[in-house]
Image (tube, rainbow, N blue to C red; front, side, top):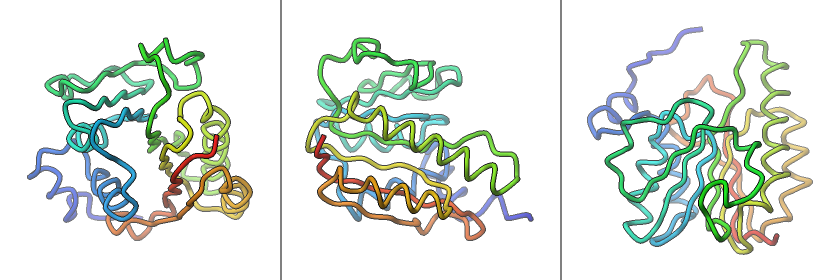
Length: 197
Protein backbone atom coordinates (compact mmCIF):
# COMPACT_ATOMS: atom_id res chain seq x y z
CA UNK A 1 0.00 0.00 0.00
CA UNK A 2 1.63 3.26 -1.03
CA UNK A 3 0.87 6.83 -0.11
CA UNK A 4 2.36 10.04 -1.43
CA UNK A 5 5.28 10.61 0.89
CA UNK A 6 5.62 14.19 -0.26
CA UNK A 7 2.09 15.07 0.75
CA UNK A 8 0.71 18.43 1.83
CA UNK A 9 1.93 18.16 5.44
CA UNK A 10 5.36 16.93 4.40
CA UNK A 11 5.81 20.00 2.18
CA UNK A 12 4.35 22.31 4.81
CA UNK A 13 6.81 20.97 7.42
CA UNK A 14 9.73 21.48 5.05
CA UNK A 15 8.61 25.02 4.27
CA UNK A 16 8.14 25.90 7.96
CA UNK A 17 11.47 24.30 8.93
CA UNK A 18 10.01 21.53 11.06
CA UNK A 19 11.92 18.24 11.15
CA UNK A 20 8.83 16.08 10.49
CA UNK A 21 5.19 16.31 9.44
CA UNK A 22 4.14 14.86 12.82
CA UNK A 23 4.42 18.38 14.27
CA UNK A 24 0.92 19.11 12.94
CA UNK A 25 -0.52 16.29 15.03
CA UNK A 26 0.83 17.88 18.20
CA UNK A 27 -0.25 21.33 17.04
CA UNK A 28 -3.84 20.12 16.55
CA UNK A 29 -3.85 18.32 19.94
CA UNK A 30 -2.54 21.44 21.63
CA UNK A 31 -4.90 23.85 19.88
CA UNK A 32 -7.86 21.66 20.76
CA UNK A 33 -6.99 20.69 24.33
CA UNK A 34 -4.47 23.35 25.46
CA UNK A 35 -1.98 20.93 26.98
CA UNK A 36 1.11 23.18 26.69
CA UNK A 37 1.63 26.50 28.45
CA UNK A 38 4.35 29.11 28.90
CA UNK A 39 7.03 28.19 31.48
CA UNK A 40 6.04 24.49 31.44
CA UNK A 41 8.66 21.80 31.95
CA UNK A 42 7.92 19.12 29.36
CA UNK A 43 9.38 15.67 28.71
CA UNK A 44 9.07 14.13 25.25
CA UNK A 45 9.44 10.32 25.18
CA UNK A 46 10.88 9.11 21.86
CA UNK A 47 11.32 12.63 20.51
CA UNK A 48 13.22 11.71 17.30
CA UNK A 49 13.41 13.34 14.74
CA UNK A 50 12.40 16.33 16.85
CA UNK A 51 9.48 18.28 15.38
CA UNK A 52 7.52 17.92 18.64
CA UNK A 53 10.52 19.34 20.53
CA UNK A 54 10.65 22.29 18.11
CA UNK A 55 6.95 23.06 18.57
CA UNK A 56 7.04 22.58 22.35
CA UNK A 57 10.19 24.69 22.85
CA UNK A 58 8.41 27.57 21.13
CA UNK A 59 5.22 27.09 23.18
CA UNK A 60 6.86 26.93 26.64
CA UNK A 61 9.14 29.87 25.87
CA UNK A 62 12.57 30.72 27.29
CA UNK A 63 11.48 30.17 30.89
CA UNK A 64 10.17 26.69 30.09
CA UNK A 65 12.19 23.55 29.43
CA UNK A 66 11.83 20.63 27.02
CA UNK A 67 13.63 17.38 27.77
CA UNK A 68 13.76 14.94 24.86
CA UNK A 69 14.65 11.28 25.36
CA UNK A 70 15.26 8.75 22.60
CA UNK A 71 17.36 5.65 22.04
CA UNK A 72 18.60 7.23 18.79
CA UNK A 73 21.72 9.45 18.88
CA UNK A 74 21.12 13.03 20.01
CA UNK A 75 19.94 15.22 17.12
CA UNK A 76 22.32 18.12 16.37
CA UNK A 77 19.53 19.80 14.41
CA UNK A 78 17.93 20.78 17.72
CA UNK A 79 21.10 22.23 19.29
CA UNK A 80 20.19 25.88 18.47
CA UNK A 81 17.21 25.59 20.86
CA UNK A 82 18.37 26.98 24.19
CA UNK A 83 15.50 25.64 26.32
CA UNK A 84 15.99 22.03 25.19
CA UNK A 85 17.99 19.15 26.69
CA UNK A 86 18.33 15.85 24.86
CA UNK A 87 19.33 12.43 26.13
CA UNK A 88 20.29 9.26 24.28
CA UNK A 89 18.73 6.58 26.45
CA UNK A 90 15.61 4.50 26.90
CA UNK A 91 12.93 6.22 28.91
CA UNK A 92 12.49 2.93 30.77
CA UNK A 93 16.10 3.12 32.00
CA UNK A 94 15.49 6.42 33.81
CA UNK A 95 15.19 5.44 37.45
CA UNK A 96 15.15 8.90 39.07
CA UNK A 97 14.53 12.44 37.80
CA UNK A 98 18.12 13.30 38.68
CA UNK A 99 19.11 11.14 35.68
CA UNK A 100 17.61 13.96 33.60
CA UNK A 101 19.07 16.72 35.81
CA UNK A 102 15.57 17.48 37.08
CA UNK A 103 14.58 18.22 40.65
CA UNK A 104 10.82 18.23 40.23
CA UNK A 105 8.17 16.39 38.22
CA UNK A 106 7.18 17.56 34.73
CA UNK A 107 4.10 19.65 33.89
CA UNK A 108 3.55 17.70 30.67
CA UNK A 109 4.52 14.26 29.36
CA UNK A 110 4.40 13.72 25.58
CA UNK A 111 4.91 10.38 23.86
CA UNK A 112 4.97 9.93 20.10
CA UNK A 113 6.82 6.64 20.57
CA UNK A 114 6.05 3.75 18.31
CA UNK A 115 7.39 0.20 18.39
CA UNK A 116 9.54 -1.13 15.56
CA UNK A 117 6.79 -2.15 13.15
CA UNK A 118 6.70 -5.49 11.34
CA UNK A 119 3.79 -4.81 8.99
CA UNK A 120 1.90 -7.63 10.73
CA UNK A 121 -1.08 -5.81 12.17
CA UNK A 122 -1.66 -7.93 15.29
CA UNK A 123 2.05 -7.92 16.23
CA UNK A 124 2.34 -4.16 15.78
CA UNK A 125 -0.84 -3.56 17.82
CA UNK A 126 0.47 -5.76 20.63
CA UNK A 127 3.85 -4.02 20.64
CA UNK A 128 2.21 -0.60 20.68
CA UNK A 129 -0.08 -1.59 23.55
CA UNK A 130 2.89 -2.97 25.49
CA UNK A 131 4.65 0.39 25.07
CA UNK A 132 1.55 2.31 26.22
CA UNK A 133 1.13 0.09 29.29
CA UNK A 134 4.77 0.70 30.21
CA UNK A 135 4.39 4.48 29.80
CA UNK A 136 1.28 4.51 32.01
CA UNK A 137 3.20 2.43 34.54
CA UNK A 138 6.09 4.94 34.79
CA UNK A 139 3.90 8.06 34.59
CA UNK A 140 3.93 8.72 38.38
CA UNK A 141 7.72 9.01 38.16
CA UNK A 142 7.51 11.86 35.64
CA UNK A 143 4.17 13.70 35.70
CA UNK A 144 3.16 16.06 38.49
CA UNK A 145 -0.38 16.03 39.91
CA UNK A 146 -2.51 18.30 37.71
CA UNK A 147 -0.20 17.78 34.71
CA UNK A 148 -1.13 17.00 31.10
CA UNK A 149 -0.33 14.04 28.87
CA UNK A 150 -0.54 12.94 25.22
CA UNK A 151 0.41 9.54 23.81
CA UNK A 152 0.28 7.84 20.42
CA UNK A 153 -1.80 4.65 20.20
CA UNK A 154 -2.16 2.02 17.46
CA UNK A 155 -5.87 1.27 17.46
CA UNK A 156 -7.00 -2.16 18.62
CA UNK A 157 -9.73 -3.55 20.79
CA UNK A 158 -7.26 -4.20 23.63
CA UNK A 159 -5.89 -0.66 23.41
CA UNK A 160 -9.42 0.76 23.67
CA UNK A 161 -10.12 -1.43 26.71
CA UNK A 162 -6.85 -0.44 28.39
CA UNK A 163 -7.49 3.28 27.86
CA UNK A 164 -11.04 2.97 29.17
CA UNK A 165 -9.77 1.25 32.31
CA UNK A 166 -7.08 3.87 32.94
CA UNK A 167 -8.68 7.13 31.86
CA UNK A 168 -9.82 7.90 35.40
CA UNK A 169 -6.30 8.85 36.44
CA UNK A 170 -7.06 12.15 34.66
CA UNK A 171 -9.86 14.61 35.31
CA UNK A 172 -10.38 14.92 31.56
CA UNK A 173 -9.59 12.31 28.90
CA UNK A 174 -9.93 12.52 25.10
CA UNK A 175 -9.15 10.46 22.01
CA UNK A 176 -8.25 12.21 18.76
CA UNK A 177 -7.18 11.22 15.27
CA UNK A 178 -5.51 14.42 14.01
CA UNK A 179 -6.33 15.63 10.51
CA UNK A 180 -2.70 15.29 9.45
CA UNK A 181 -2.73 11.55 10.24
CA UNK A 182 -2.57 9.59 6.99
CA UNK A 183 -5.93 8.07 6.13
CA UNK A 184 -4.52 4.52 6.02
CA UNK A 185 -2.99 4.92 9.48
CA UNK A 186 -4.57 3.17 12.46
CA UNK A 187 -2.97 5.52 14.97
CA UNK A 188 -4.71 8.04 17.18
CA UNK A 189 -3.77 9.96 20.32
CA UNK A 190 -4.98 9.71 23.88
CA UNK A 191 -4.91 13.03 25.74
CA UNK A 192 -5.18 13.33 29.51
CA UNK A 193 -5.62 16.60 31.37
CA UNK A 194 -5.07 17.31 35.07
CA UNK A 195 -3.39 14.11 36.26
CA UNK A 196 -4.73 12.84 39.57
CA UNK A 197 -1.50 11.00 40.50
